[in-house]
Image (cartoon, rainbow, N blue to C red):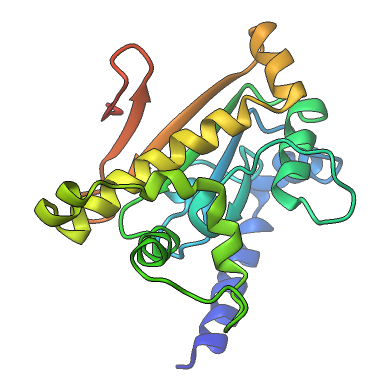
Length: 216
C-alpha cells in the first residue's frame, strides 16, 4: 500500500467514527467555532504530536508547528511574514488560551543544523537555505566552549542546545505585549517542555530550580 492510499484509508475510518451518533453533540458545538484552553508551539517533526502525547481530543489544543518549535522575538514589521507570531496573537487575544507550551524534543533536525553551522564557515550567499536564518533566532543556544565541544558527544551538545533553544523561545514569547499583559493579569501561564522520543518522557522547565524536571 502506498503512502497516499494509506491516508485515504485512514480518512475513511476517521469519517465513520466522526459521523457516529455519539459525536452529534460535539459536532453541533464545533461547527460554530473553537474554544481551546491550551496552545502548543511544537516542532514540525513527524514524531512529535501534542494531541497524541497528551491524549487530547479534537478542539482541545491550538497548535503551531514550525522547524525546531521556535518563537521569534516580537517585532513590528509588515514587510515579512510572521506566521508563528500571528498565531500567538490570535491564541492570546481571541481564543484567550490559559496555557502556552513550547515543546522541544530529542533528535531535532533544526537544532542539529544550527550546531553544524557553528562548526563550519559557510558562505551565506551560497546554497541559500531558509532553515539557516530561521535557526538564527536561537543562535546563542549553540554556543559552546572548546572544552565543552571536546569533552561532549554531539548527542549531549544537541540535548543541551534543544533545551536552551526552548528557553530562548520562552523568553521571546514573554516579550509579546499581549502575552505580557495576560501574564500580569494571571490569565495565562507559559511553559517549556522537552519530549524524549526514545524514552517517551517529558520534562518541564522549573523556574524555581532553573532545571528541566520530569513532568510527572
